[in-house]
Image (cartoon, rainbow, N blue to C red):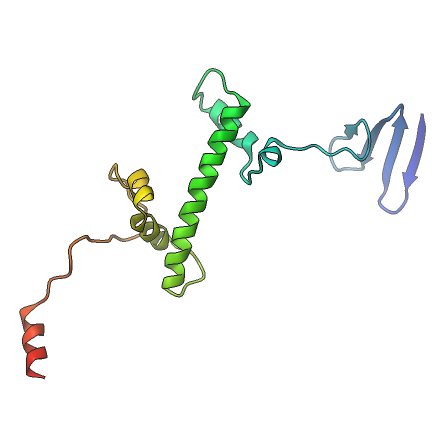
Length: 154
């Protein structure tokens, strides 16, 4: 058993038969790895996704969606959720840019979903609504008779 002390950070490193235990005072549990250069690759990184697959899997198991959950199906579900979220952000950011805004609000999200046919069918088909987003009518605004008479006189 050999030990070394790193005075710069106050870390203590114990080495025994290719197993490294690195302990940082007051920072929680020690970490073990076979070699110091090895890094863990997550399922999300392997699949090339941004959203965490493990967290989606944990939520599915916690809500008891199914008795058995496979990793491959969770990768597919996470990929689908990431795609839908990306599409929603894309159309809502275009609506925010049209209104000369830098921040996407609920209104921009609603207008973006309403403008895209597939997203509208997915989210608005069942009569759902987005809170504090207002509404968009499909009917044209009625033209008042007084306004048309005043325009003819000019």
